[in-house]
Length: 263
Image (cartoon, rainbow, N blue to C red):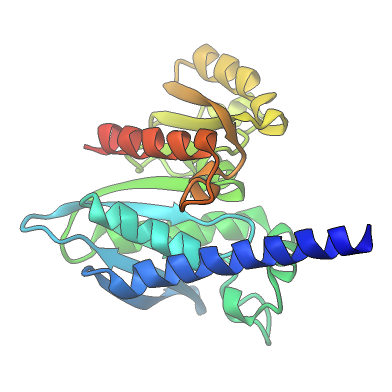
């Protein structure tokens, strides 16, 4: 039994390391312009990863909200993929300036530590940090002034939440994240909200009907797709040769849908 446990643990670790290498390889081989930026928010430094598309005209911008692991290489690679579609993508590190010893996600000892940090964040602070990213993108060089937001897992929930807070966004793309439970928050939403969910993710999917009912009651746009046989976090796990068929197909269809929504 112990040997079997060690085998699966080693297999899982190898898969994680392979995925990390794949993300870094994509970033290193990308022809697009990447840069780390620092944004001031009332004396607090918000670090962000910015990617520009290769195009000859001004582009729509997208805030990319990371998962509960913080600003990982996968999130940066996702920002690069969005830039490949033709958009300016900014992934803010919402663990920026967390405390005296942790100034970014990379200062956390592990992804588990980063998760603890994420769930210790004050929601008002998260909204202010996203506002800082929003204001940066409104006037960024090469941008057309339009700003959308996309988020994954914890970031998906924050995307839905941010739509209740910031009326200036063009669209909110929620990947396997839950919506606000307060209908008065829903009433403040101005932008259309688009949901992306895996069929094998009932923890999240059990909340969709309530979100849809509240959005309809308040006359808001909420369009969503549930991709059968896909699990939670299928955009990350659907990459690479080790991906299940359900996750791979869901990821491909979601990329197509992103393009259709943002164009």
